[in-house]
Image (cartoon, rainbow, N blue to C red; front, side):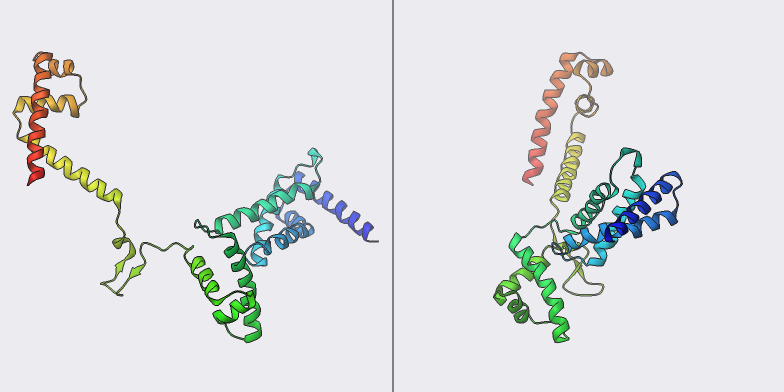
Length: 259
């Protein structure tokens, strides 16, 4: 009898898949999801023991994978739908868990204990009708209280803090975390801006023709020959002006550093 029922379900599934492929509709898709929800339940049960996400969340995510499989299934390829859909369901759940995971990794043993703790806490809450203490949780996990506190701290530190998070006083005088964290890139930008200002101040102090030569060669990226043509002087003169100008700039900039 069960074999006959299974055979009928397979036939119904194939018939609906054929109809959906020829004329897709929301109603047909929903029927296919209901017929194949067992594939999603199987994957959700597999992953529930390997993460802290709820069964309902995993079921919903898995259903997204099932819908994608329904939409992409091609009967002409000759594949069994269950074999085709399972990788889509599993992949959707894996992507979901990967996106939910933290960028900060902690030792595997702590991760395992943390998952076990999530289940233990749920059971203890039901039994005690309140949130369990650290000692009660540690006892349920058969570990020391200190180790459980280390696990809690490690898991808390996996979550990144916002740079806008207030530190210290509240209200208008509150300081954000971002204001206390040094930004090396901004510091480098500041230094570059300061160097640029000092260079401009030094250039102003040079002789006009020498400054023109340096601007053509270094700021406008012209060759010494092209700069000579622009200025109506020889390339040799440009070369001499470049050397003289650079020596003068070094002296002027060194003087500002000593101030």
